[in-house]
Length: 124
Ligand SMILES: [Zn+2]
Image 1 (cartoon, helix red, strand yellow):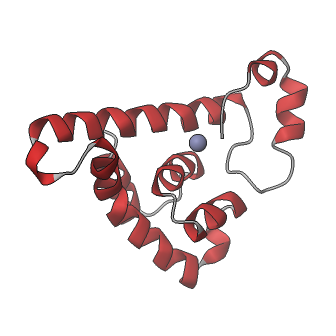
Image 2 (cartoon, rainbow, N blue to C red):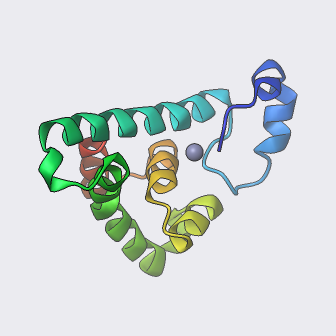
């Protein structure tokens, strides 16, 4: 997902864009939360890579390795409890996009302590 300036200037277009249950986001605040989660996730990866450059090939590998435990956890949910997840989240799992998985999960805010602890670890 991305921030499109028209969307931010026009709440009605946000409502249309987000119509239905495909995305976890249902308003502008959710979209901003999604984008902020991407930023925090990258900032965390940058810091991790700076601290432990030998553990990773590059920054992209760092974010992949950081996010992998969340991906594994949520993939298990995908098979056991798919209706807990948004359609967008199910699709991002199928294409193995761990960055989108993390951002979408932050907006979905599923009440699962293990999952929320894993998410916190890749953001802060
Ligand atoms: Zn996104």
